[in-house]
Amino acid sequence: MTSILLTVPHGAFESKSSEGKQREERTSDLRAPSIARNLKDLFSKSASTTVLYINEEVPRSVMDMNRARSRESKWRKGLATFMLKHKLLIDIHSFPLLSFGSKSERRPRKQETEQPNIKEYPKVDQGWKIVLIDEYQALFHPWTRELLSRIKRRIPETIAVAGADNDIMDQMITLHPEGYSVLLEFCEDRVYLSDSELHLALTIISNFFVEINKNTVKV
Ligand SMILES: [Zn+2]
Image (cartoon, rainbow, N blue to C red; front, side, top):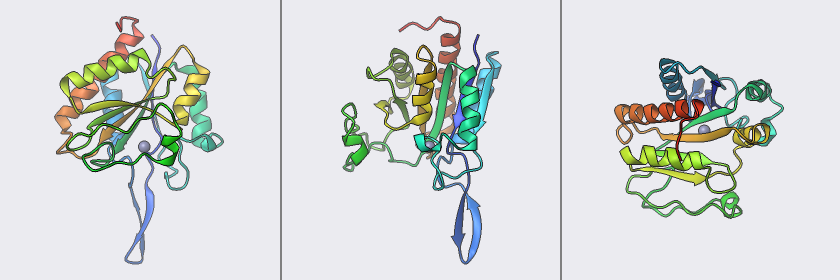
């Protein structure tokens, strides 16, 4: 049984100034740190060991820890040592309502249009609740397809998209071509993705990884 590595690269507070005061505020991935902790608890209930590694020091606006240029940072160097010991990685993020897919026209960013695999996201009324991002070349890894279908069965507003520039996954794939990693994005709107629906998704995800660990996953 191998241990699962959970990462939250955008878990740091940003410095904001208002009314002449400086204050610390989380401005990105608002829900990601608590989701990662919930997932760790679910894994420990199923007797799987998990390492939770959150970047709480460097805000995304200072350095994006999910980009190749951050590899020399303290957090990424620490992550690299964890990566060597783990073959399964889940990279946890969260996004504001409508950031992924909506009825309003969403133009692909320049970087995405250069990626042949990335298509414009289909539109759902209120955007997606959960997004799986996959960096494997053959669009997608069979485990991503299986995980997607299991979540989608219970939460239809779930989609998988081909990633670009997710350097934590890229580094994992290079270190462990036989391993598996996925980036999970969760909607931050607690009305649209309720805590109970989120808990259901996290239960499906943790059961899936436990199956992978036991080599019993069927795809
Ligand atoms: Zn993020």
